[in-house]
Image 1: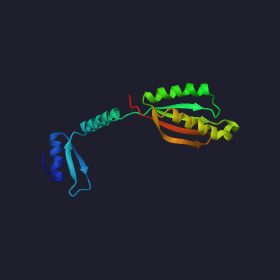
Image 2: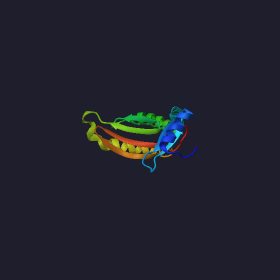
Image 3: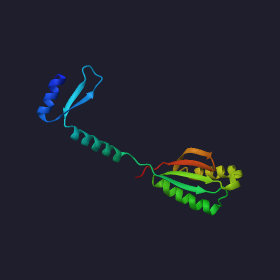
Image 4: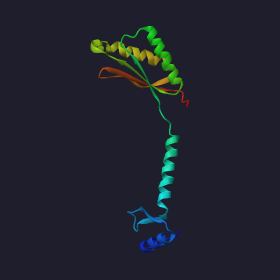
Length: 147
């Protein structure tokens, strides 16, 4: 449009029935732009919405074990974990210790490490087993990025 002194820019904006928007107030002289402010906000919101839609959404699936989970239950849950990882989800596997079963935390860690070993062709361990309160948690990220 052109470079105008502030008073003239205000007059020019009124004449065009648009808004005078200060872009960079710290510059010397301050930088302003004559635009339709409502339209500017609308387009900015539209751009943000498009960016948000393009962003990948991470799905986290959880599988819970007990410290003394038997082989059949382990295999059943392992098959579910395989399916989750094949679908591109992130897996949170945890062992929940009830009451005094916290004394078996080594068994819980062995169980989670066994799961990590069995699932290494579908995903890679993002966080090794870590005890937080009464839960020992491990994260496995999918190698397959299917949507």
